[in-house]
Image 1: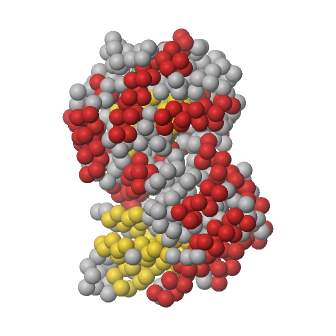
Image 2: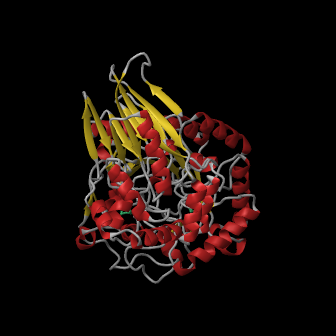
Image 3: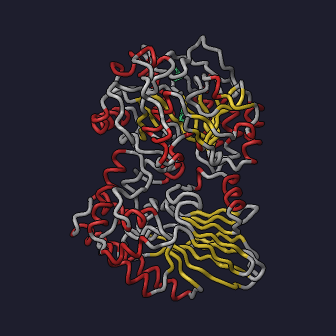
Length: 310
Length: 273
Ligand code: SF4
Ligand code: SF4
C-alpha cells in the first residue's frame, strides 16, 4: 500500500466545533448536523496547547473547521489568539455570523501581521441550486453572511462544491461572480472543490468504487506535496488525525500529541483517490500547494462529484 | 527608498549586494535598475529567477544580464521555458489566472531562442554564499520548493525560523510572489527581494529591487529600492506584440489584473481588483 510521509507540518487544522453544525447538508463528507455530537468542541486552551506544540515543528499556518466553527462559543477568542501566532483560516457556512464578532475579528486582524481568511461554502449561485443541498433558506442566509463580511472589509473565499459538469466551470464561475457582486461583493474570490464520496455524500450519489484507489505505481512519479497529508495534520477532541477529510476513519487518529502524529500514513481510502486527482483541495491557493482544481491528474469518474467542507 | 534597518547604523558597511527577482521580460526596468545599482556600487548582483513571462521580446534581457555579470538563480519559469514544459509551474489554481498564465507562457516559450533556453536550463535552483561568517541562501520561491509562495501575511515566524535552522542560513532571500517584504528573526533574516517585471499592485508604476548590506558588526541592512522606468514604452511594445490588454493595464496603472486568486487577503485588499 502506498504510504505518504509528512515532509513538514505546514498547516495545522482544528476540528474546532467537532461534528456540530446548524445545517445538515446532503453532501457533507462527515455528516455534520445539529444532532451529531460524535466529535466535540475544542476549547481555547486545547488550541493553545496544540499550537504551542506545533510551533516547535515550525508550523506555517492554522485552519479551523467543523461542523460550523462559530457554534463554538470560544471561536472568536480562539481566532484572536491565533492571529498573534500565525495566519488563520476559518471555514464557515456564513449563516450564524454576528456583527459584534466581526468587529473583534477585524480589530484582531488589523493588529496582526497575518491574514485572517474566511472560507464560506455556497453550493450554487441561486436558491434553486444551493438550497436542495444545503437546506431551505440557506442561500439567502449565506449571502447575508457574505454581505456582512464585506461590510467589515473581509474578502471571503467562496467555496463551491462542483455539482455541475467540469466543462461548465468558467460559465458557472462567471454566474457566481455576477450574483456575488449583486450582493455587495465587488471582487469575489471563489474556490471550486471536487466532491468527496464519503459521509452524507455517499448516500446522495455514491460511494467510491473498488478501482478508485491510489496504487504504488500511481504514486511513483507523483509529487506527494500535492497531498494534504504530506504537509498537514488536524486536531480533534479525540487526538491528532492525518487530515481533515478522514477524521471518522479509526486509522486516521495518529496519537494524542502533535509529535506522535508526524508519522507516515497509508493512503488506502477512496477519498485519497480524489486527493490524488485534484491535489491539496483543502489548502488555500495562496500557499502554492494546490493543483488546479479544473485539471485532474487522471480522468475523473463520470459521476458528478461534491464535497462538504465547513 | 524603504529602509528596514536591522542594524546599528554607526557601524561601517563591509559588503553590499543587489538582488532582484522576476524580470518577466521587462528589459527596460532591468536596464534602469542596473543603472541605479552601478551608481551605488555593489560587490555582486543576483537575480533570483523568472527571466521571462508577462512582457515583450523575452530574448532582450539575456545580453543585459550577461554584460552586467548578473548571477542568476533558476525560477520556475526558467525551468519550464528552458525545458519546454507544458506550463509555467507558477502554482495558480484559478481558471482565469491559469488562462492568462498560459497566454504569457506560450508567447515567452515561442520567442525565447535556443541558446537562451539552454542558459535557463543550466541555472542553479539555489546559490549559497558565505560572506565573513554569514551564510546566505538565495532561492526563487523558498529553499524547499521553487514555486512556494512566501507572502508576508501567510508566513509565520516559526516557519521562517525553521527554514533558517534547517538550511543553516543567516539570511534567506527569495522572490516568486511579486511583492517585497522582509522580517528579522531570532536566527537571522528573511528577505523577499521583490520583482522588476511588473509593479507591486499598489497603484504605482515603479518596480523594486533590494540592497543587502553587511556591516562590520555582522548585522544586516535591507533597503527596498523603487525603480522608475519607461513603462509607457513597455506598454506600447506589449500592445504591438498583441499581449493581453489586462497585462498592459497593470503596467500603466500599477494594479494587478491577473494572478489575483493567489493573493492572501491582506495583500489582496491593498490592491484595486
Ligand atoms: S484523504 Fe487525502 S489527505 Fe487524507 S490521507 Fe488520503 S490522500 Fe491524504
Ligand atoms: S457541509 Fe458544512 S455547513 Fe453543511 S453540514 Fe457539513 S459542516 Fe455543516
